[in-house]
Length: 103
Image (tube, rainbow, N blue to C red; front, side, top):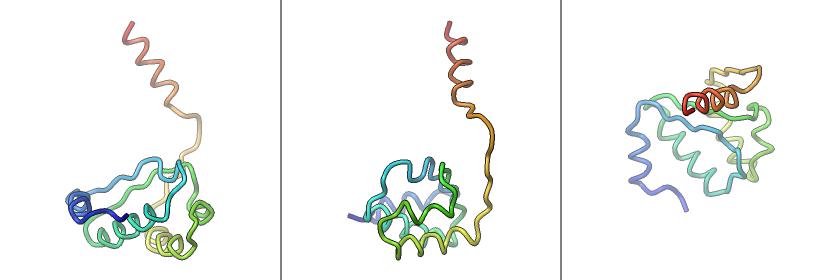
């Protein structure tokens, strides 16, 4: 089941599309098709920001369909600006600060 036209229009109305924690759960064939459609339609509309725990060279192993994986990677990776963050996660520190604030 692919994204309906309304959902695609809605997502394409944003200047920037952010996909957070990409592929943190198994990705279905339908979800890959939806992502491919979004990427194709957003080509001239604005940037797509993807955050993930996986480096782009590992994405193929996350997808069941190598053809769609190739198509997605071929559209995203060559034009991407990659930022690799290193160091400890700030999530634990942030929740500690919030707990102190609530006390």
